[in-house]
Image (cartoon, rainbow, N blue to C red; front, side, top):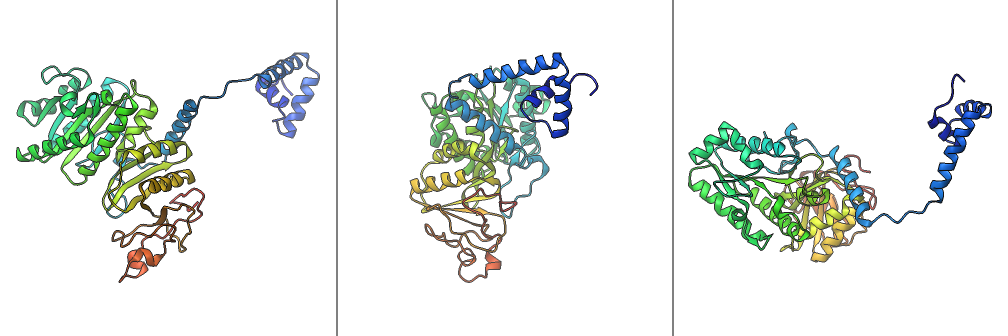
Length: 420
């Protein structure tokens, strides 16, 4: 061979990782080259030292964070881009990854993790200008008083459109403390949503086409207790957004909050900024909630946390619209079944992949079935197999009432687009 092999080649030779032809070529050179033999001996010594070293076990929290980061990165490639006009299925709510805060649906609920003040200001301007153009009342909420609101939200007034709206009364500034109903430093979810409904009614009475809120939530998301309450608030508000003329951009400072803390809150929104959550759990018409994105093993702990923050169901069934889920792993299905058992309800998971056969499930409180064109006629009981006849309902044929039968290959992972 011409010249000496590189250190990487020598290392791979020592590890037996070269193909036969390369192994013969490099081995022949090393046998006749003192310099490369010394390199091989040094690399082998490092390998032996590493093999003999002992390391403390990785803390569970670190392993969990790594798993979540990988799940978010994987999901980032599967969640549809919000600005690409994702059509969804019939009667399905719009959702997706937002590359900016502009051009979303009129009453969008968006989570945005910002990395500097200029980024927050840019997104806030986009969102505010869309609301002003739609005739909505726009409220900017952050730390500071009405007269001296400081920080990045003040930069929004650089926009002449926003400045004019503030002067004309179509926009206003509010302190975070006056925006939420707080119990100490924790958001009172129910009372805060009631405030939003009252503010929306006031906006309508003043001649506006609803209300649009831009709020920096960072101060109310610092501790697990705060996030428990704030996530509950986000879900309750989202349930109102599909009924009331309310839009909200919820901002989180990525410099002050961990990846997991942001994911815990971003996952409760139909729209989220890139790489903030592996899945989205949001209010949906004719369902307890909708699911999109990827629910892999790395996101199961986050999924369970989100489910438990939804609160108790007042119904005997739990219909989940998962037609837009790119992937649902076995552990996520077990988590959903466990959650349904804790609530003493039966969960019906709507999927989208057509398949002719029904499936007997190993999850006692979970039925997986196809999408329903007319809403559920009857919820299958626990441990019951969902057939075409079950889903079609009385008086209809399977073809009329059954758009996409059951997903196959349980208890393995469910991938709606492939059936695997």
